[in-house]
Length: 196
Image (tube, rainbow, N blue to C red; front, side):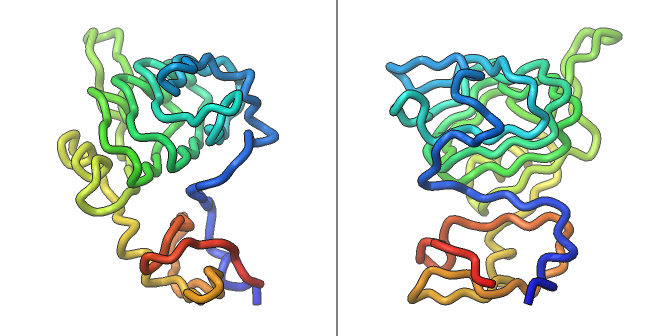
């Protein structure tokens, strides 16, 4: 029954309702209450889940340079509440080789992800083989194409899920991808659970 996940190396969920991850404390973030913007990440984790709420306020934006220089960061999960990612937000995150951007994001700033600063030539350079996953016709796809990054469409991956639309339960997976992203919706219905 569990064989369908054996090939997956990494799974990302798009949390619609989420409290702060036990590994990523809300206190690790500097946060502007008025705008719902994370302005700085001060934690040391390699895998970060951005909480849906900080101090009861929805996280709507990742500000300019918010995660810049987090060179040990390997994985970031962005909730569906986020609508914008500021310029250089993940600049110099040299260990971050891919990112999944939810379709709630409608604005992505200059060199927001996939770039590192080269002191030798004094300019921002793209991270080799950087990959962006997202939905077709989204800000993620536009950003990937504009910056010549590999783009993986999550739309096509949804067809690999066996899904019970009545209960909102994923009952199986027929794909062979090494990285699997669980969508928040399939065929317009909210994903509520993953079956056995």
